[in-house]
Length: 386
Ligand SMILES: NC(=O)c1ccc[n+]([C@@H]2O[C@H](COP(=O)([O-])OP(=O)(O)OC[C@H]3O[C@@H](n4cnc5c(N)ncnc54)[C@H](O)[C@@H]3O)[C@@H](O)[C@H]2O)c1
Image (tube, rainbow, N blue to C red):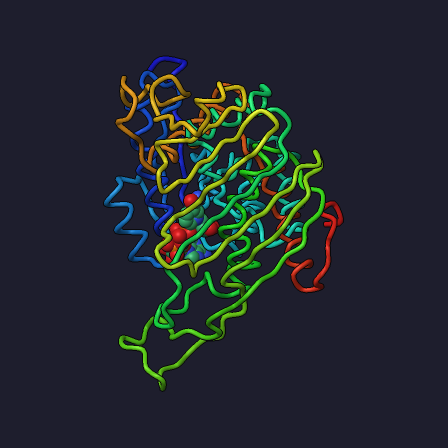
């Protein structure tokens, strides 16, 4: 292996659904980004469920596995820790990883609240390690193009930004209880789980939030415990103490207006993460359920030709050419995970910035805290207060 082909030894904590996506991405990066400099090596996987850790290590060819995350974080060979556990563990894992001098990729939401987020930002800053948060939707090459269009003024002054993250998986009362339905393990709830993605998207495209007001609802207040095979009236249930849906309005520091909605109760919507920005020179409209196309509108088009036009993802936008040479073939979610982890590895090897970083993760938590306070107190809340 040449000097520039540096190996980065990876520890994964949390062998669940996101752990699987992240690991598959690490495995594919050297081939897709060939001849990429950083070569991830799967050193150790940890999961609380011992059998899951063992099987995962076998499936993805990790060198070691453990049921104790402390072993993974302290493994002297490990360069970078990848955190894909339920949210309440992120803080302790980050603190331990930073104290061991490891670079860190942490899934979103970074923290349970802004206080924790700030502490985590400060510790990685002090430790001088690279630290990135998994706001994966901002890595869609078409979203990168949207950001460039806004930055270069092609849409003019942005007046409106509206975004949504709509799902329907929690609508049935028979959907069992899990860590996602409890404050203690999930943090604020749907507002932070889905909300963190579109809040970061808004920060990425439009800038910082100034103030928010909000409305939250919980539609199903208790859920059957997962070990019960066929849930019935009599089966043991657990209380849900988080929101199922939240809507919020925002004013950005730029003066732009924002309108946002997140829910797990939008029948028919599976992963409808989308946004629309309206500026003085035009508009842009995107929906992840159609992640390979983006709609743009320019006020400068001749009057008899005005209308939204659809641009298909193609090799002219960042990264997409790595997979294919013609527009319209399309990428999937797995490609976005590869892009974010490639950038993380590149940052470690070549000293580049790892963005979105823990500052972004902390700022997103501030906005979430303000939304929660606004919904509770039924008033406008300044975001900087957190
Ligand atoms: N970026 C995205 O698009 C995206 C998508 C899904 C989930 N996520 C995030 O990824 C994280 C994990 O979510 P998921 O859907 O994979 O959850 P999951 O429930 O599928 O997996 C979590 C795993 O963590 C393990 N775990 C629990 N406690 C542990 C401990 N103390 N030590 C080691 N492992 C432990 C569980 O046993 C489980 O295997 C969450 O923070 C979530 O918000 C991000």
